[in-house]
Each structure stands twice: as structure tokens, then as C-alpha cells.
Image (tube, rainbow over the protein chains, first blue to last red):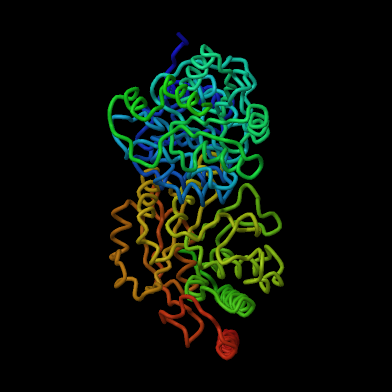
Length: 310
Length: 282
């Protein structure tokens, strides 16, 4: 069994570490510092932590204004409330103004499984990637989360990082060279390519193992950056394996699947299957059961791939 | 309270006319523009840029500078006219208003024009951005101040009230906002479309220190806006009662001059009106 780590705690520790090395980092909270893992930051740097209460539109503007003065604001809160709710502020004040703001949508995807559609964030990737100049990162494991935070600090410009909340298995080597915009081949294979992102990377990895046991060599790619997309890696995989499957905890429309379909349709038409959440409000219930009901468990992903291969 | 002497006031009045002439010049070039709000806030812009704010047209990114945020971005003609008058860019650029790929868009873009600090246009964004600026400046650059011009119609955007609360909560007393209360918006009188009156009491309740003045009176603007904060620990607010399209008698306080598609004849009358004001300054 892989080691499990809490993604929000992991984010908070990475933020604290980054802040120790960079005095310009400030943290903004929408009555959500503890839930976003920012308590250690708040305790260590109370003068760099700002509480705003539940006003995400206002905070997005404040983040932009702070960035104009040279600060690097990290605004972390529940994913739909930092993406869908203040979308226009994200687009205009952060994107259009090209400000060095880092927005972290936590408890993203279906992870608020029992709280329902208002608190689930299945459209964040789709809407935020429409904003020109915004980097969109969806880390696949706790190692990725830490590396994404440091990469976001090093990158000058707006970044959105999507983070779940159930504990995640460690899948990546602590020393691997994370680079924004560069996917990682985790398993080689020539029969099909599975491109997975974020919280479902572990499920895709499980599916890859199952397929291997059945003699199907699936290439597995951890696509931790949605934008800019690693076009070369996708096109190479399409060329070499001839079939592409995408896996994500989000809407098919506009998400990773949509993103890759856009690329392949124009550059190298390739048969595809897109695994994620189709056009619906997901039911509520325990997280793992919810994933099962939507066909997002490892065995189910393997089954879908098998059917696709015929 | 500080006071402009006779010469200073006369000089500012001349500048205000020249800024209004710059506005007209852009409308002439582009054949249309948001004239009403630009001219109602011109006197505020004049006093801010020529008497109060510490800015350097030769070094627009000067770290110690004061910041200006035009929350009501559609009043950009006033901002462009002021920046041109202050020397941030050549006045010939004003003639590109309305042209393809102009640097002077229908709403301001900070990446296209020196002196523009924010990209505004969608209403209800500027005050939050200004709040962030004030917070950042207070940490590293405490002498710098942040000035904001908002519209009165804009106040219906709920995001303003998030900003109002946060700026007060964080005690950002290095910020002064103006509400350019010209009383009109696209569909009629602001109080009829969506009233947030009484504005003074609302802002006071949100923790701001509020003054209400004649916003087309240069002396009153100067007297009231020069020393901030009005009260230590509180953000300052000037509710400026203004006349929409101030300076053009045929357009003043008329709802259909929010956005003006100018005819040649109207432009000529407008030019004459401003010339008369200029000649009347003694």
C-alpha cells in the first residue's frame, strides 16, 4: 500500500516552506484558513495572513491589488468559491491584469461528496483554462502538490492549483523534476495511452496495473498541468499508441478530456475515450461510493479501456 | 483645511478645461464615447493629478508613487485626458481613440498606456483592487496612498460592499475613494433605477469617514481631499455631487449623454462651449 498523505495539510506545509524563503508571499483566507491547511502559515506569519470572511469576489480583487505592489498572494478556499463564484474577478483582475496571484481551489472535484453539487467543483478546470495567461495545475499526488506550490512561486503570473481533500497515495518520486507544462510518463506501453490528472491519477494507476495483468500494455501519463498542455507528449503518445483515454475528476466538457480532444482533433485525429463526469449534478454520498457510481474506480476504468480496445 | 490661492485655483480651472478639451478631442476622433461620466469627474481628476497625487510622468512605475484606480472604467476619457495633460504620453495619441488596436480603448488597459494602474470596465471591481493596493503599500511603502473614483450607478454591484467592509475592517486609512454622484445612469436617475441612498449614512455604517461636497468645485475638492485620513484608522470617502457632462450645456444632466454618438454640429457647439469657459477664467 502506498503511503497516504492529507493534500490540504501537504499544501499548507509547502506554502509555509515557500514563505520562509520568500517574504513577498502573503495568504488570503475566506474564513477558510484552517480547512485550507494554512494554520501553520498563519501561526508563523500572522502579519502576512489576511482574513476576509466569506467574500471571494472581494478577495480576488484584493489579491490582484496586492500583487501590483509586489506581493505574491496565495488565495486558498473551497474550489467552486475561488473559481465559479468570482470568475469575472479571476478573469479581469487576475488574468487580464496579468497579476502574480496564486489561487488554490481545495476540496475540489467530488471530494465534498456528501455536501452536494454546490460544494463540488467539476467545472473549475473548464472555466479557468479559458482565461488567457493563467497556468492551471492539477497535482496527481502529494509530491506533486508540494512541487506545484514551489513551481507556482517561481512562475511569474497567475496560477490556479486544484487540490482534493481525501488522503492521497504518494505515487511520484520525491526527487523527480516537476516542470509546469510537462507531463510525466509513469508507465510505458504501446497498446493505449491513459492520460490522467489530479485526484484520479491513483485510480488510473490502479487501472494500468489491472490491464498489465491482462496483457494490455497501457502507457500512463500524469498530466499535472492542464494549461499550458504538454502537446508534444500527447501527440507522441497518440502517434505511438494510436488510442487515448483521459481520466479526471471533473466534467468531460472543457476538462482534460476536452483539452486533449481539441488538440488531437486538429493535429492528429485519434480514437479517444473520455472518463470523468458527464453532463450532470453528481449525487451525494460517501466519496468512494460516489466515484463507483460514476465509473471512476480503477477496475471500472480498466474495464472501460478494455472495451475501448475491443 | 488647506486652501488653493487665487492663482492656483485659476491654473487648475484652466487645466480642467484642457482636460475636457482632450475628452472632446477623443470623441471627435472616435465619433462616440462615454462623455457624461468623464466630464462629471474631470474636476476631481484635475485636483488629484495636479495638486494631490505624487506621480511622475517620466517614471510611471516609480515605486513610491500614489496609485489611482478608476473603478468606473467607462469614464476612461477623463483618465486619458488627464494623463495626457500631465505628460504621461503625447497628446497626439488622443487622436487614435476609436481606431483599430488603439492604446486608448473604450476601457483602460494598464499594459497599453503609462500611468494606468488597473484594467477596469466591468463595474464593482476597482474598490477591491484598490484595497489590495492599500494593504500591500501599508506593509512596505507606508507613505503611498490609493485614490479611487467610482460611479454612483456602479454601487448596485454587490462586490463594492464586500470591498467597503474589508477596507474598513483592515483599517486601510491610506485610501480615499470618491463617488462621482452625478445622479444618472443609462436608464434614468440613479435613485429611480436602484437607490442606495442615503450614501453618506451607508458608508459611515460600513466604517468609513465620509464627506459630501460639490464635486465640480475645484477649491472644495482640494480642501477636502488633501489631507487623509479624515479619521485615523478609517478609510476616507468623498461623495462628490457632480453634474453629468459638466461643461457642455446642451448635454449637462441629460440621461441620453451617458454615451454620446457625436454629430459634427454637436461637436462644434461643444468646442465653442469649452472655449467660452476657457475665456471666462480670469
